[in-house]
Image 1 (tube, helix red, strand yellow):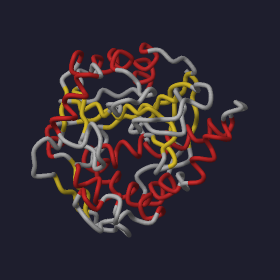
Image 2: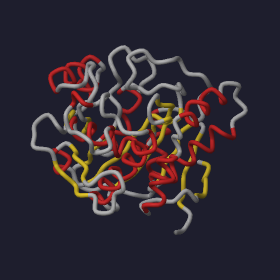
Image 3: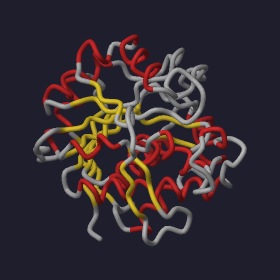
Image 4: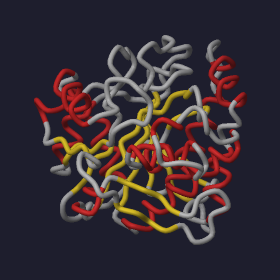
Length: 293
Protein backbone atom coordinates (compact mmCIF):
# COMPACT_ATOMS: atom_id res chain seq x y z
CA UNK A 1 0.00 0.00 0.00
CA UNK A 2 1.28 3.45 -0.92
CA UNK A 3 2.02 5.98 1.77
CA UNK A 4 -1.01 8.02 2.75
CA UNK A 5 -0.88 11.79 2.80
CA UNK A 6 -1.55 13.43 6.14
CA UNK A 7 -1.76 17.22 6.12
CA UNK A 8 -0.81 19.19 9.21
CA UNK A 9 -0.94 22.74 10.53
CA UNK A 10 -0.12 24.00 14.02
CA UNK A 11 -2.75 26.72 13.60
CA UNK A 12 -5.81 26.03 15.70
CA UNK A 13 -8.60 28.19 14.32
CA UNK A 14 -11.99 27.42 12.76
CA UNK A 15 -10.68 28.77 9.46
CA UNK A 16 -7.67 26.44 9.59
CA UNK A 17 -9.99 23.45 9.90
CA UNK A 18 -11.61 24.44 6.60
CA UNK A 19 -8.23 24.93 4.92
CA UNK A 20 -7.17 21.47 6.02
CA UNK A 21 -10.28 19.96 4.50
CA UNK A 22 -9.65 21.86 1.27
CA UNK A 23 -6.08 20.50 1.18
CA UNK A 24 -7.54 17.01 0.80
CA UNK A 25 -8.86 17.90 -2.65
CA UNK A 26 -12.16 16.13 -2.08
CA UNK A 27 -15.74 17.30 -2.40
CA UNK A 28 -17.90 15.09 -0.24
CA UNK A 29 -21.02 14.35 -2.30
CA UNK A 30 -24.70 14.35 -1.46
CA UNK A 31 -26.00 14.61 2.07
CA UNK A 32 -22.99 14.88 4.37
CA UNK A 33 -22.91 13.46 7.90
CA UNK A 34 -20.44 15.25 10.17
CA UNK A 35 -19.45 12.99 13.05
CA UNK A 36 -18.44 14.97 16.12
CA UNK A 37 -18.31 14.31 19.84
CA UNK A 38 -21.14 16.20 21.50
CA UNK A 39 -19.35 16.23 24.88
CA UNK A 40 -20.67 14.65 28.08
CA UNK A 41 -22.50 16.86 30.55
CA UNK A 42 -19.86 18.45 32.82
CA UNK A 43 -16.95 17.85 30.44
CA UNK A 44 -14.69 20.88 30.04
CA UNK A 45 -12.49 19.72 27.16
CA UNK A 46 -14.82 18.97 24.24
CA UNK A 47 -14.65 21.14 21.12
CA UNK A 48 -17.58 23.53 21.00
CA UNK A 49 -19.92 23.99 18.03
CA UNK A 50 -18.69 27.53 17.41
CA UNK A 51 -15.26 26.11 16.59
CA UNK A 52 -16.72 23.54 14.20
CA UNK A 53 -19.24 25.88 12.57
CA UNK A 54 -17.28 27.10 9.49
CA UNK A 55 -16.26 23.54 8.63
CA UNK A 56 -19.75 22.08 9.01
CA UNK A 57 -21.22 24.92 6.97
CA UNK A 58 -18.58 24.48 4.27
CA UNK A 59 -19.85 20.97 3.52
CA UNK A 60 -23.50 21.73 4.27
CA UNK A 61 -23.32 18.98 6.86
CA UNK A 62 -25.65 17.51 9.45
CA UNK A 63 -24.20 16.82 12.89
CA UNK A 64 -24.60 13.12 13.68
CA UNK A 65 -24.26 11.27 16.97
CA UNK A 66 -25.48 8.05 18.59
CA UNK A 67 -26.61 7.31 22.11
CA UNK A 68 -24.15 5.96 24.65
CA UNK A 69 -24.23 2.55 26.33
CA UNK A 70 -23.25 3.75 29.80
CA UNK A 71 -25.42 5.81 32.09
CA UNK A 72 -25.10 9.55 31.72
CA UNK A 73 -26.61 12.50 29.91
CA UNK A 74 -26.50 10.81 26.49
CA UNK A 75 -27.75 7.23 26.95
CA UNK A 76 -31.32 7.97 25.81
CA UNK A 77 -32.47 10.04 22.86
CA UNK A 78 -34.47 12.40 25.08
CA UNK A 79 -31.48 13.16 27.32
CA UNK A 80 -29.05 13.32 24.40
CA UNK A 81 -31.16 15.81 22.46
CA UNK A 82 -31.48 17.95 25.58
CA UNK A 83 -27.69 17.97 26.00
CA UNK A 84 -27.10 18.77 22.32
CA UNK A 85 -29.28 21.82 22.81
CA UNK A 86 -27.56 22.79 26.06
CA UNK A 87 -24.13 22.53 24.39
CA UNK A 88 -25.28 24.70 21.49
CA UNK A 89 -25.20 22.15 18.66
CA UNK A 90 -28.86 22.56 17.72
CA UNK A 91 -28.50 26.35 17.73
CA UNK A 92 -26.16 26.22 14.74
CA UNK A 93 -26.82 22.92 12.95
CA UNK A 94 -29.28 20.23 12.02
CA UNK A 95 -28.60 17.42 14.51
CA UNK A 96 -29.38 13.74 13.95
CA UNK A 97 -29.23 11.18 16.76
CA UNK A 98 -28.87 8.33 14.30
CA UNK A 99 -30.17 5.59 16.61
CA UNK A 100 -33.09 7.65 17.95
CA UNK A 101 -35.37 5.02 16.48
CA UNK A 102 -34.72 1.40 15.62
CA UNK A 103 -34.16 -0.97 14.09
CA UNK A 104 -30.38 -0.64 13.86
CA UNK A 105 -28.57 -0.90 10.57
CA UNK A 106 -26.62 -4.16 10.85
CA UNK A 107 -23.37 -4.59 8.91
CA UNK A 108 -22.02 -8.17 8.74
CA UNK A 109 -18.36 -8.73 9.62
CA UNK A 110 -17.20 -11.74 7.63
CA UNK A 111 -13.63 -12.18 8.80
CA UNK A 112 -13.79 -10.75 12.29
CA UNK A 113 -11.91 -12.45 15.09
CA UNK A 114 -14.06 -10.79 17.78
CA UNK A 115 -17.25 -9.58 16.08
CA UNK A 116 -19.62 -11.09 13.51
CA UNK A 117 -21.64 -7.90 13.00
CA UNK A 118 -21.65 -4.18 13.69
CA UNK A 119 -24.78 -2.28 14.64
CA UNK A 120 -24.98 1.41 13.73
CA UNK A 121 -27.73 3.99 13.98
CA UNK A 122 -30.16 3.30 11.15
CA UNK A 123 -30.09 6.93 10.00
CA UNK A 124 -26.52 6.40 8.77
CA UNK A 125 -28.16 5.07 5.60
CA UNK A 126 -29.57 8.57 4.91
CA UNK A 127 -26.12 10.01 4.13
CA UNK A 128 -24.01 9.77 0.99
CA UNK A 129 -20.77 10.75 2.70
CA UNK A 130 -19.20 11.47 6.06
CA UNK A 131 -16.73 13.96 7.48
CA UNK A 132 -15.19 12.47 10.62
CA UNK A 133 -14.32 15.52 12.69
CA UNK A 134 -12.45 14.20 15.73
CA UNK A 135 -11.02 15.72 18.86
CA UNK A 136 -7.81 13.76 19.34
CA UNK A 137 -6.98 13.14 23.02
CA UNK A 138 -6.60 10.35 25.53
CA UNK A 139 -9.30 7.90 26.54
CA UNK A 140 -9.81 5.98 29.80
CA UNK A 141 -10.75 2.74 28.02
CA UNK A 142 -9.35 2.91 24.48
CA UNK A 143 -6.11 4.68 25.43
CA UNK A 144 -6.74 7.42 22.91
CA UNK A 145 -9.64 8.76 20.88
CA UNK A 146 -9.36 9.75 17.23
CA UNK A 147 -10.76 8.87 13.81
CA UNK A 148 -10.95 5.11 14.36
CA UNK A 149 -12.92 5.51 17.57
CA UNK A 150 -15.34 7.88 15.86
CA UNK A 151 -15.92 5.32 13.08
CA UNK A 152 -16.45 2.48 15.53
CA UNK A 153 -17.89 3.47 18.90
CA UNK A 154 -19.03 6.85 17.54
CA UNK A 155 -21.24 5.46 14.78
CA UNK A 156 -22.42 2.43 16.75
CA UNK A 157 -25.91 2.50 18.18
CA UNK A 158 -26.59 1.93 21.85
CA UNK A 159 -26.73 -1.82 21.21
CA UNK A 160 -23.79 -1.57 18.85
CA UNK A 161 -21.65 0.00 21.54
CA UNK A 162 -22.54 -2.85 23.92
CA UNK A 163 -21.66 -5.33 21.18
CA UNK A 164 -18.21 -3.76 20.71
CA UNK A 165 -17.45 -3.28 24.40
CA UNK A 166 -18.48 -6.83 25.32
CA UNK A 167 -16.76 -8.45 22.36
CA UNK A 168 -20.10 -9.71 20.98
CA UNK A 169 -21.13 -11.19 24.34
CA UNK A 170 -24.28 -9.05 24.64
CA UNK A 171 -26.47 -6.34 23.16
CA UNK A 172 -28.03 -5.46 26.50
CA UNK A 173 -27.00 -2.14 28.06
CA UNK A 174 -27.26 -3.78 31.50
CA UNK A 175 -24.28 -6.00 30.56
CA UNK A 176 -22.00 -3.14 29.49
CA UNK A 177 -19.73 -3.41 32.52
CA UNK A 178 -20.42 -6.96 33.76
CA UNK A 179 -19.59 -8.62 30.44
CA UNK A 180 -16.94 -6.22 29.19
CA UNK A 181 -14.42 -7.87 26.89
CA UNK A 182 -10.75 -8.35 27.62
CA UNK A 183 -8.87 -5.18 26.66
CA UNK A 184 -7.23 -6.47 23.48
CA UNK A 185 -10.51 -7.97 22.27
CA UNK A 186 -12.26 -4.64 22.85
CA UNK A 187 -9.57 -2.78 20.88
CA UNK A 188 -9.76 -5.28 18.03
CA UNK A 189 -13.55 -5.06 18.02
CA UNK A 190 -13.22 -1.32 17.48
CA UNK A 191 -11.00 -1.90 14.45
CA UNK A 192 -13.40 -4.49 13.04
CA UNK A 193 -16.48 -2.32 13.49
CA UNK A 194 -14.77 0.75 12.03
CA UNK A 195 -14.05 -1.18 8.85
CA UNK A 196 -17.76 -1.67 8.19
CA UNK A 197 -18.38 2.09 8.17
CA UNK A 198 -15.40 2.63 5.85
CA UNK A 199 -16.75 -0.05 3.52
CA UNK A 200 -20.21 1.52 3.61
CA UNK A 201 -19.08 4.98 2.51
CA UNK A 202 -16.18 3.89 0.32
CA UNK A 203 -14.25 6.89 -0.99
CA UNK A 204 -16.84 9.35 0.33
CA UNK A 205 -15.03 9.83 3.63
CA UNK A 206 -12.66 12.47 4.96
CA UNK A 207 -10.96 12.75 8.34
CA UNK A 208 -9.84 15.73 10.42
CA UNK A 209 -8.21 15.23 13.83
CA UNK A 210 -7.89 18.28 16.05
CA UNK A 211 -5.13 17.68 18.61
CA UNK A 212 -5.80 20.19 21.35
CA UNK A 213 -7.10 20.15 24.92
CA UNK A 214 -4.94 17.06 25.29
CA UNK A 215 -6.33 15.39 28.37
CA UNK A 216 -5.77 11.73 29.21
CA UNK A 217 -9.57 11.54 29.40
CA UNK A 218 -12.16 11.57 26.66
CA UNK A 219 -14.96 14.05 26.04
CA UNK A 220 -17.27 11.26 27.22
CA UNK A 221 -16.07 11.81 30.80
CA UNK A 222 -18.29 14.04 32.94
CA UNK A 223 -15.32 14.58 35.24
CA UNK A 224 -12.30 14.70 32.96
CA UNK A 225 -8.75 15.50 33.91
CA UNK A 226 -7.56 18.87 32.64
CA UNK A 227 -5.26 18.85 29.58
CA UNK A 228 -1.78 17.65 30.48
CA UNK A 229 0.20 18.94 27.49
CA UNK A 230 0.14 21.79 25.02
CA UNK A 231 -1.89 21.83 21.84
CA UNK A 232 -0.34 20.29 18.72
CA UNK A 233 -2.51 21.29 15.76
CA UNK A 234 -4.84 19.99 13.07
CA UNK A 235 -4.36 16.87 10.95
CA UNK A 236 -6.33 15.91 7.83
CA UNK A 237 -6.28 12.77 5.69
CA UNK A 238 -8.34 10.43 3.57
CA UNK A 239 -6.90 7.51 5.57
CA UNK A 240 -8.23 6.87 9.10
CA UNK A 241 -5.27 4.70 10.10
CA UNK A 242 -2.63 7.14 8.90
CA UNK A 243 -4.22 10.16 10.58
CA UNK A 244 -4.40 8.45 13.98
CA UNK A 245 -0.84 7.16 13.61
CA UNK A 246 0.37 10.66 12.72
CA UNK A 247 -1.25 12.07 15.86
CA UNK A 248 0.33 9.39 18.04
CA UNK A 249 3.71 10.08 16.44
CA UNK A 250 3.30 13.82 17.05
CA UNK A 251 2.68 13.20 20.74
CA UNK A 252 5.74 10.96 20.94
CA UNK A 253 7.89 13.56 19.17
CA UNK A 254 6.81 16.38 21.46
CA UNK A 255 9.13 17.75 24.13
CA UNK A 256 6.18 18.99 26.17
CA UNK A 257 6.58 18.06 29.84
CA UNK A 258 3.08 16.57 29.90
CA UNK A 259 3.76 14.20 27.02
CA UNK A 260 4.73 11.25 29.22
CA UNK A 261 1.48 11.42 31.17
CA UNK A 262 -0.57 11.16 27.99
CA UNK A 263 1.63 8.38 26.61
CA UNK A 264 1.29 6.47 29.86
CA UNK A 265 -2.49 6.48 29.41
CA UNK A 266 -2.22 5.36 25.76
CA UNK A 267 0.34 2.66 26.50
CA UNK A 268 -1.34 1.38 29.66
CA UNK A 269 -4.43 0.57 27.59
CA UNK A 270 -2.42 -0.77 24.62
CA UNK A 271 -4.30 1.87 22.66
CA UNK A 272 -2.30 1.68 19.45
CA UNK A 273 -3.42 -1.94 18.95
CA UNK A 274 -6.55 -0.51 17.32
CA UNK A 275 -4.33 1.21 14.75
CA UNK A 276 -2.32 -1.98 14.22
CA UNK A 277 -5.47 -4.06 13.77
CA UNK A 278 -7.02 -1.56 11.37
CA UNK A 279 -3.84 -1.62 9.26
CA UNK A 280 -3.86 -5.44 9.32
CA UNK A 281 -7.47 -5.46 8.14
CA UNK A 282 -6.33 -3.37 5.19
CA UNK A 283 -8.56 -0.31 5.17
CA UNK A 284 -5.68 2.06 5.89
CA UNK A 285 -1.94 2.24 6.32
CA UNK A 286 0.40 3.31 9.10
CA UNK A 287 2.85 4.55 6.48
CA UNK A 288 2.27 8.21 5.70
CA UNK A 289 3.81 11.40 4.34
CA UNK A 290 3.27 14.41 6.58
CA UNK A 291 2.57 17.53 4.51
CA UNK A 292 2.84 20.86 6.30
CA UNK A 293 0.21 23.45 5.41
